[in-house]
Length: 317
Image (spheres, one colour):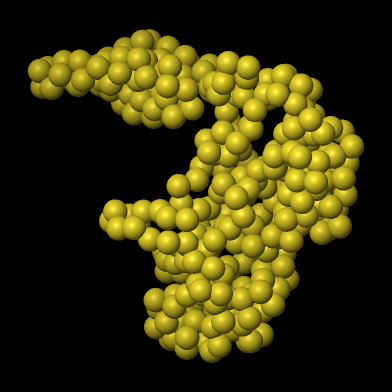
């Protein structure tokens, strides 16, 4: 599969065995691939959990475990290299040229739909599963696998704010996701995965299939939740996109957020306040256009409004 690097040069996805991360046989080689001196690698390993900034998100009240600068570079390096590895067609997260939109585009409103995800996924991805991936799949000796695991986990699980957590969570539980994909394929259904958001659509995407998928997840000592079932031609939300008989549309919840943001712009007391709100409005409408091109006119209007407001602000100075 061909893609494009950040500089526009073509690149190819590589096999797992062809990855620069495959079969690192010594701590020195690990440091080389991670692009840090061995002494820095040792310091990161000694610091352990102090390499993270841990906070609670005010809006969601979720715990955010974010690597500090140097460890963040390591996580980003691992994420970059794993993103180059070939993955099953059903995966749409953590890899180039895929997104929540490409994930949703695989599904139709015809047939039933089963949706489910894993409760507290990253905190549930155990360090033992990560270590198994590096030791048994990537063929690291245990001393190197344990070092890599220590770099990429906190308190025995994947960090919620880690750059590599998204793609690494897939590899840690690839066998489980493959089982669910095989279950769907055996019934002629479509299966996609976005982080832990699993969607199965088709004639046999029924409560029985949901039950089987939940059982598979349970065998891996994880817990499925947010399970939903949809009937034939019933609109369904797939990774933030409404799949309807008319095609993909922006969900009502996201449309309401745009309306609220627009109302805030109109209610602002000064042009400076309006200008400060415009990036949020334009960002939301730009995302809407990616889902449904019918929003292009509203995006153009928002961009024009920002231009007008900015001109007035500049003239008043």
